[in-house]
Length: 369
Image (tube, rainbow, N blue to C red; front, side):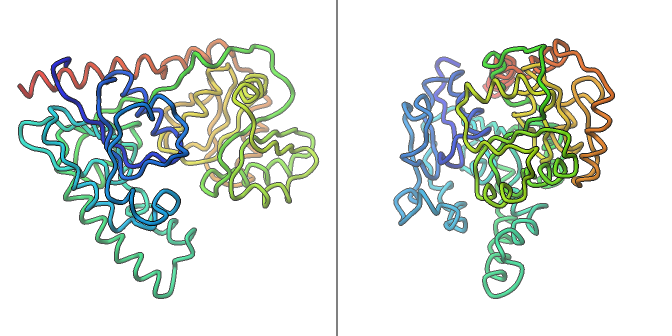
C-alpha cells in the first residue's frame, strides 16, 4: 500500500461527530491521503484533519455554504461527481450522503465505509419532512421532488462502489434494502483508552447528547419526571435545550455543555447511562461501557449490537415514558459487573477498527492487481 496513492472522500467537514472520528482513524492509517469534501468550515475543530490536504467542491464557494450547506442539497450529486480522482489508485469514501457517488475508473479500487444510505431520502423521509415543516404546501412538493431525484441518483451511484463496509449490521441490512449490495460490518472506532474504569458508582442516572429531536433526550426527561425519587443528570446543548429545561422537575439537572474531562467523570460515576435514540451504531453508549457503566438503551438499531441485554445493560422496546420507567425499575433489581462491561467495550477499540480496515483494503488491493 505504500506505493499507492489514496484519496478519502467525506461528505462535509462542518461538525466533529462520529463520522469524523472514523475519518480521522482512516487518516491515521493512511496519513499521506488527500481529502475531498463538499464543504469545509473554518470552524471545524479537528487539528489533525485540518492539517491534511483538503480539496473542496464548488459548493464551498457559494453564498453561506458553510452555514446553510444543506440548502444546496440538490447540487450535492453534481458537486461530488466533479472531483477529479484520476491520479489515485485507491479511493475510500466515508459516506452518509453522497460521498460514495464519486466517479472512478476500472483500474481504481473504491471502498465505501457507509455510515448509512442517505437517511432523509429513504426510510426517514417522512420524519425529515415533518421536522422541517414540509408536510404540505409548495415547498413540500419541491422537497419531495428533489428527494425523489436524490433516491434515483443514490441507487445509480451505488454501483460505482467496488466494496461496501457498514458501521453495523443494522446499516448492513439498510444497504442491502436500498442498494441490493452486500456489505461487511466493521464497527466504528471508539477511543476506549480515553475512559477509565470506575467500580464505585453514585446514585444518579446520566445521559448526554446533542439536544435534537431524534436523540429523544426530552423523552428521557419526561420519564424521569414520573420517577421523582430518581436523580437524572443531562449534559449537552442543542435547539431543544430550553424546551427540555422548562419541563424538567427538581430531580433532573440540565448541565448544558461540559468539558470532556468533566463528562468522563460524570459518565464513570453514574449508576447507569440512559440512551433512547435509534442510532445506526451509537458511540456514546460504548464510551459509557468503557467506564464500566451499564446502559439502558432503546432496543433497536445499533444498541442491539453494542449493549448486551442483561450483561452490560438492558434494552427497552418502545420509545415511550412507560417503557423507560419499566426498564429503570427492572434495572434496579439487577447487578452488573463493571469489569465485564468494560471488557465488552474494549472489543470496539479504535486499534481493532484500524487493523480490520487495513486488512480489508490490503486484501482487496492485492486482488485488484
